[in-house]
Image 1 (tube, rainbow, N blue to C red):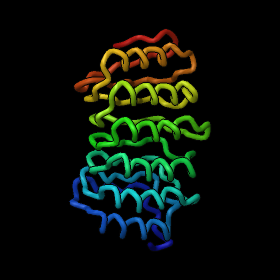
Image 2 (spheres, rainbow, N blue to C red):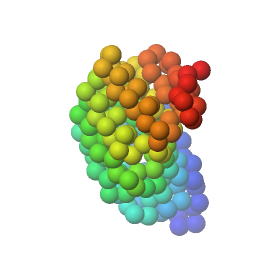
Image 3 (spheres, rainbow, N blue to C red):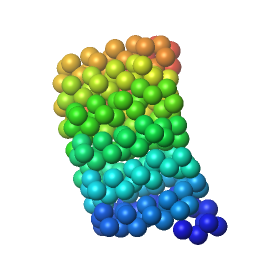
Length: 202
């Protein structure tokens, strides 16, 4: 809360933080939101109510967070909806979002896709591994990225159930000359490293 605090990176992964601790942290950051650029809360238990608190921080026009990691935090489509609402109101600063190993499922990904369509969205890295996404969610994601393809450089969709049709949607996106993806992670840690120009896999 100290106005002289200039902390830019805060990592609290695996610290047993619940919604109560998350609320205290958010309260402090609300009073001094402009310096923090990276926040890591992965593998805690803020759940959906903690996400609601955190979303209120992200809505603050003074919030300058660029990296937000929330892997394995018990977030469902309800928590994802709160996050999306915040990002819609303040989309231009966040560059990396990690929601891996939560349960937003297809409906949560559809909500997130609305943010990705925003021309002010500057996300460069999006991690959604192990999020129970099927070809339906993949289609929504690809549609959003086609409408705003030039910023995203890394996409992680590993350990989801995309099936053949999901891969077809992704392939269509990669054909777009404006697509700037450099890293595409698929099943079980497999990764395509993509070069500009004709898309190639290493």
